[in-house]
Image (cartoon, rainbow, N blue to C red; front, side, top):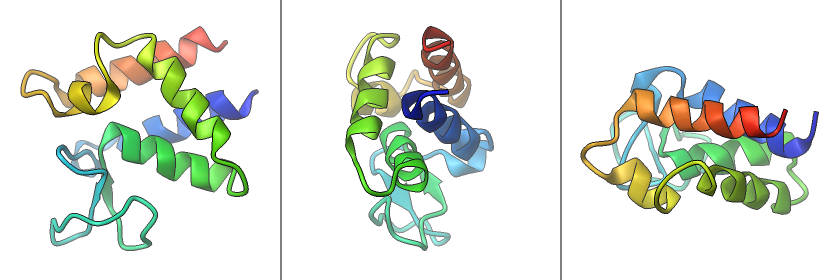
Length: 107
């Protein structure tokens, strides 16, 4: 399995619980404050933050696989990742379906 696929699967795992998905910022702490996705206190993530977090876990010494995973995801959504994640009509289920399609495209 490629690092790209592992990162996409990791991001899906992070976001599988709806309480771990957020909008408008890459990550939040348990109080709901906006923080960086790489902070240990981060407990919920937007789609891009989850990909970054999974990438840091799976490939800590290189950022290219996370960027490549974002490129794969870009091919299955109709807009940029931040706009897709943050638009009011996007649901948690939509986010998971987009990740599923991206994962499927790599297998």
